[in-house]
Image (cartoon, rainbow, N blue to C red; front, side):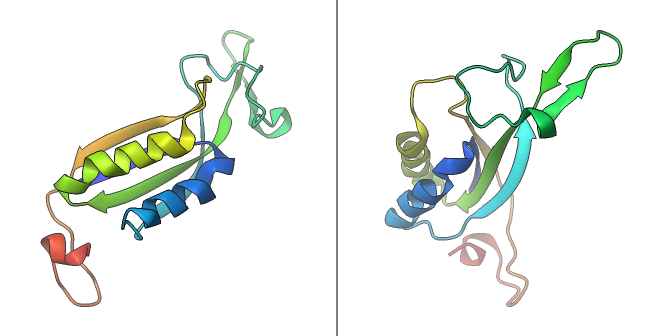
Length: 125
């Protein structure tokens, strides 16, 4: 099993959910997050920026650092499904602009369904 973590633009969440459901991945967790990439959240093309909520003054340098609101989605899937999940996330989120997001694939040692006590792949299907 693998966990696929993706950080995507807020407005792409519904299309991403629909795409994953379309390939048979209905189970998904979403968290609202804020962060920045190597551009340090600099303003520009990224229209998701809310300066009033996301600007912080760095004490030592006097420069500001902006955090961009995003969505982080997580899905635990069987190893064979990882390429289709990653391709679907890319297809539904790729614009070619800075801020399209990141995908991380992490190993999962075990999963347990609390209701039944099932574990392993039985807990995620």
